[in-house]
Length: 257
Image (cartoon, rainbow, N blue to C red; front, side, top):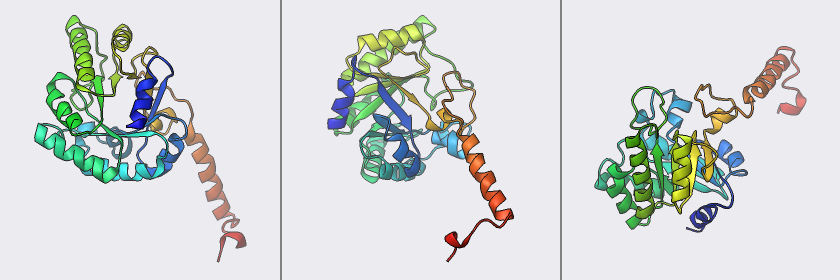
């Protein structure tokens, strides 16, 4: 709970940094720079080339989270509950307990507001910390990515759900692809932090898929900025290896038994 309290205290004071990790090696590096390490169900498209996150299984999430846990030392570790694993109160509690126990994560994330509020209430009642998620909901969406908060109906629903989640006890809310004025207003209205992804600088923090920002994953989504082209450096190493093998420079005596 200490780490969660530290996240909440950042509201209106300093930006919250959140990035994804799906393995120990990446988690170790990400952990040095962030407040939250998220094992996102985005691993479905990033690692397995699934067309949507709906195909991600509970077993996949748990196995990757176990690996990530080995690399996270200081940050808050949050794990996504995959599609249909919190469809009812009973199923949600059973699966949330399983994730918490087997991965030793600090919190879980669920997508949605009013429709899943009973599940969230039950989890929090059972001392399972929850990170909320509103706006674009990949587990529910059909078709292409579309920003949220364009119609009066969407705006009203987002505002209502945000307050509902806060009052239910989530410690923060991810706002995905929410129109700037609405994200700004929600952030202003809430006492808990908002973490944006494609939802403007006005959120209390930002989250991105690590593979996207380092250029390891091909994506044309508007909110993704490539901060590094890591493939360039990977190819330099691979070309050098191939060249040294062909020229018999590798393995030298130093690298042989």
